[in-house]
Length: 159
Image 1 (cartoon, helix red, strand yellow):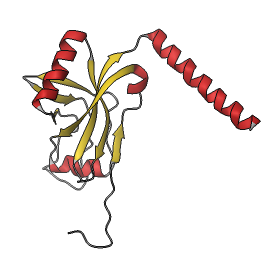
Image 2 (cartoon, helix red, strand yellow):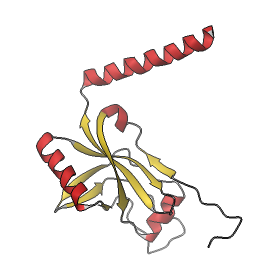
Image 3 (cartoon, one colour):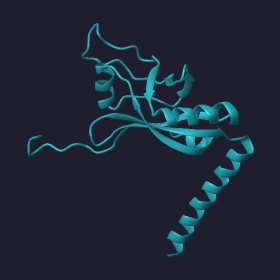
């Protein structure tokens, strides 16, 4: 049991891919576990991670996170990890099958949205099944966002 004064941070977001919601139309989201080394977990707990250019891929019936950046842990010496290594994502067999069929048949993409620690202290990733937006869709969503911003300003000014 934890000491009385200590409290755990619940669902602490470590890294977020903010451009994903702009560049992709999110169809469905999944929670996946990450297979990490000890120094990677320590680096994540410091809040230093980048998943902006990363994506997930299906290889040999497993889902892998590719091109994510977890910097080396400074206090570790020769046992440090490689910053841009491929990391395995933990999903159930049914979820893997569903994701593989959607990617292969419908031309969708697996995009990581955020990495966080759950209430048990485990590193988790929110993975999205997404379809890429066309240029005119991006412009339309930007116009809608600007209009909503103007509406809120007008309502705020006029009371």
